[in-house]
Length: 484
Ligand code: NAD
Image (cartoon, rainbow, N blue to C red; front, top):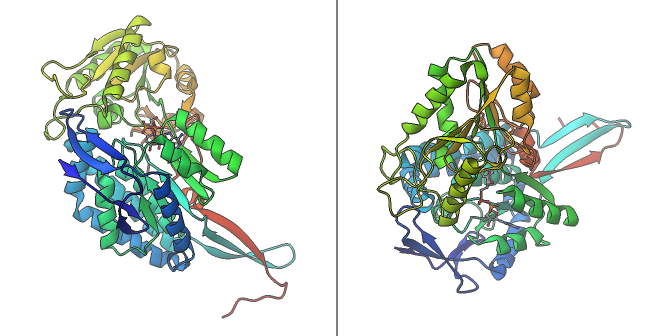
């Protein structure tokens, strides 16, 4: 069992302000695998002071190219410890190791590389023509920022937020979830290795009360939040009241539309990873599969075969495709949705319970419901587990209507041999990221975020960088000419 007795505050490993502790429980064995300090309000205060000092220090004044160098070093240092990070994330939250290295770790370094490229090329200062004379438009660091991180893809979400903050020159206080504090300890070591100026990053694992204290802290100027829509509403309300900058990346209930002409033999295997990746604990999971009634039976058969092909078990075993869910409450929640699906009249076709032979660990069988009506609870609410629904539709316009009949709008995809018909569908679906014959995952260099209850604002790309910048217009004398 690992025990930690320090927190990473302002670039130093320091004793925590209280004896509060987090026990990390293995989702696979249900045993305590680590004990780490839980950050408290006093630790947040210290982190904010360190961040304020860093804001006045050398890092925010660096050029974009100089900040990019730190981002590249961070990416390389993570790559050098990628297996260790992947193993830790699998141990703390249960995603299969067959997915962890790429989905949790290399994807994070790809995000950081994208931020580095953008920091190098972004126009942080631009001379523009104005009404009376030239105007110097500057993009300055937003101030002290906070990154509130969920447990499902902990390092990846850190890369999205910390990468943006470091590219913008803004110090960041990270708050990992209490379920997944361990990868943050490796990140702290890596930040030391790359000699990031002190104060730029603090890492404070804690629960929602301390999360809310960070959000309310008068010294925090910007909140980047990823998590549930319920918590996002609270965070957004506090930020609105205090006029803080805020980005909210929230839940999803995305639809994969299979058009009549789709080649099922290639589409279903490509769609499956998005539906069941990370044990189905993915905000962009395509958990609603919309099938034309003319091919409904074929789609159900192909999806059922694919779902049955997912082996459940110890996530450290490389042959396993679905590991345990993160916590007992999450397992119970998912099983509750399965019961609701049955009670509301959907037909359970694959799975539906705890897998045989796995008495310990929070496992749920990969599960498929068919004959699902889009108004059923399992089609409307985010389950966040390995549970899929196939919903029939008559015409393509009905598929678009069903896809849009959701509180959420995060991701989605369409599967067709006619790419133009796919683009036509994509234009009509109200969602932030979309894929045509590719699951609607995010592109590391382009904006990602949600419509409707899936969020506010965007991460990645210039839009995501701008969310960590303030804009200042400096009106210059009419006869101003820049120095040669
Ligand atoms: P959660 O909302 O319970 O917690 C997320 C984080 O917010 C945790 O660090 C938690 O401690 C903190 N938190 C909770 N309430 C808070 C509050 N009132 N003030 C401040 N901090 C608070 O979510 P979770 O269960 O950790 O993660 C799963 C959810 O995250 C799912 O809904 C999923 O769709 C969503 N998610 C969204 C994206 C995205 O990019 N849109 C990515 C990953 C996960």
